[in-house]
Image (tube, rainbow, N blue to C red; front, side, top):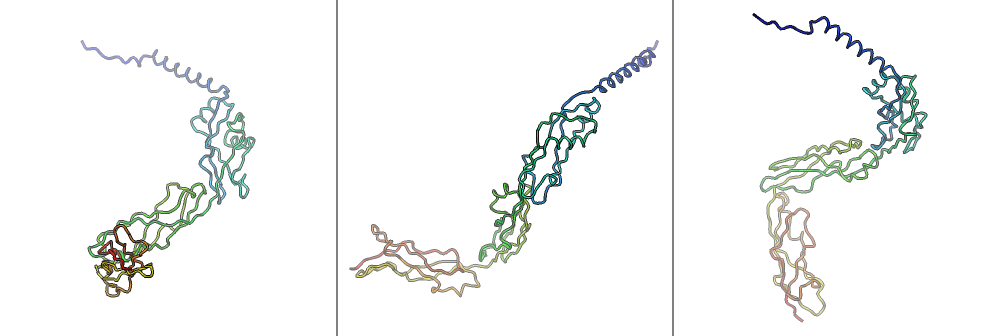
Length: 316
């Protein structure tokens, strides 16, 4: 004997029960939501039509609350879809203002215009809306170029980086520009360089999006040349020796070692340099002087003396 499963929902009585339950719920909700309520509603504030020479500061009010006398259906709608209140800043702005005021009566009109005209708006969370503005200014700042260059053996940069232009102009609120002193580029890379380089470098954007700048890129160039080492012997000139005293330096010459580009190698002679020892700055306890290079060619790098101390004898 087989047992057949009986679906209880096929019962006429159950169907009738659920029908009247749904119908009762519908009429209950209709009655409930048709009643008048006074409830608090939140609205979002958006600032529009901002004067071209100003910006809205970040600390301005972004939402407002108020009481609304309405039925449950209207209230549910505004709960699900928050009203948006657009504030036309230019309407209340006068040239040079750093703050504009929207009075309570004007706010109520603006809110009512976004709602059903028959609804009464009461008890605003603010008595007036103070809109803070910041003027857009300009500021010129230098550009710092970030590089990751390496050079082939025997090759070096002949001079420092050249940047054109070497500065940019920022535009934005003064409160932000006051803290910015320079701009950086994105990193330029070059490996085993053996010739001069000219590249475009992109200026990195600033964290605050209200800050703009011009130009957006700069031209970076550097002269690369092959270098070689050279040595020359130079006489040491003694200065500030009192009359009646004879001083003998030991040694009286110094060997100078430096690097110069191959192109300039033969052009550099001992006449491009001058080395002195100052009698007034001698070390009397240990009887030595320090040689100093007071004249040099701007075409050489990595200058070194073969000796750091010069002994001396005094004859009276």
